[in-house]
Length: 150
Image 1 (cartoon, rainbow, N blue to C red):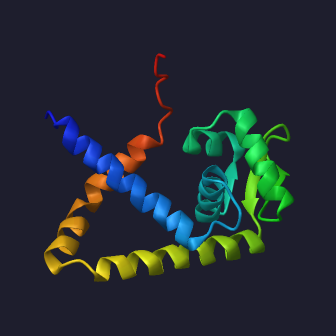
Image 2: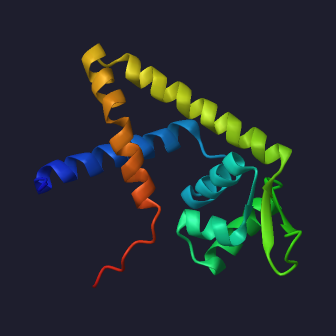
Image 3: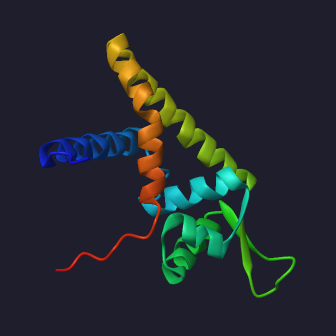
């Protein structure tokens, strides 16, 4: 199926604006988008191998190690040796990390709920109907991106 560039740009713009506005209005506890994403991934899983986290987040191991280091310094996650392979590292959420993640998630859910209340029932139904496609798109987005030639 061919989608007109104008429609793709409208979708990109809308998703970007929603995301940026949610970040701005809910605060981010002083964290970057990447830190928030990594914290969320670890919070949902409770415990992830660094290699699995790198794959999930689409980050290279060096960058991910720095991000996890900042989260660890803030007391939000801890790194522990894997029980079966002492060379591997597991990232676990701390109680404080779980609290921060839950607070941010609650704030963002509240904001989005308020915004949805301003839409018509048909608009809300259309958004809910689009959720499976948006979730598939989001999962696709987790794959490492191809390099764009400059």
